[in-house]
Length: 431
Image 1 (cartoon, rainbow, N blue to C red):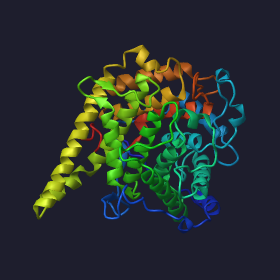
Image 2 (image 1 turned 90 degrees about the horizontal axis):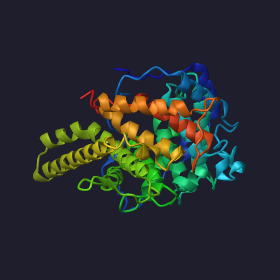
Image 3 (image 1 turned 90 degrees about the vertical axis):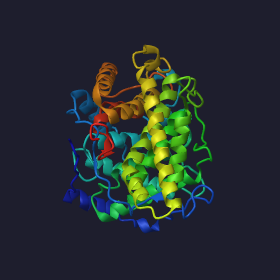
């Protein structure tokens, strides 16, 4: 089984010392508001046992198509370390003024694609690109106010309009989670950890009672799944994440699927079945991965319980985990039953960033179980993405999110899903 290891490079450590000279202790980390998560509520924290990471399946070598896409991303990074949304389809009728405007959401997705290829802020051919992206995102988080869910002052990007106003925040939680353990030195690692905690605190503070967030867009269900993934990824990387906030987000994702009718709720999905299904499955999958990672600890609590209250609490938690597993399995089976339907796969009817993001959620769910279903999907979706790749290595959408940065990054992440890190013991093949 492939296990990715990342080593610090001295010259990058020297560069990082200059880039990250700011002290992370200056970040004002606000606790979540009372009522969303209290101080005595169970959390996943840096005091937890260190998570070991691997991949769910043996990853394929990077193909020429993937390498050309990565090269395109690396050469279109802005001087600030950010990415703009890039060139859009002429069908969108405007938006060109935002082409080179630094976008947190586009930056996080582009940098995540570079990370997924095997580089880190400390090592690999794209280390310098990733490190500059980290610097940009941290600066944005540090400059944000404590009151809102925003982490950027930039407004009006295509991604915000289509996925929701806070998509930058959700994608930042995912990106910072993945790099927090691979920074070149202790000072930069502390800064990223502080920035990640600020983002997580914002997400928890503004989470509604039903597990959702505000900031409506054209298809906000996809942003909801990113927020859920961000909470769970951060929990596994050592951030202080409210267990209740994580469970509420996962429960909301599960409730979007009706096991009786075998249909997904279309709310927030622009009436597109692909978006609805992928958003639900993506959120559930992220939650179940954490559950699997924590199950042995809960079992130990049950075995070592000294009173009825402790036994009941542990038993209830195991029952919740079992229910979440069953819901995800049923949802995944329904999605599998529709993967041969061209209309379902087409989403809105043509390629766009929303389609690519939906494919990513489906891929991450299927790779966790591996086997023929995963291999068939991976082969077919890769063939489709290869077919529509531009000659310069990028991808472009043809509706809604058409910017080359977002489309290229999300397409690459789909094609490299077999490299997505998961905790040891959480994937079917490992179990």
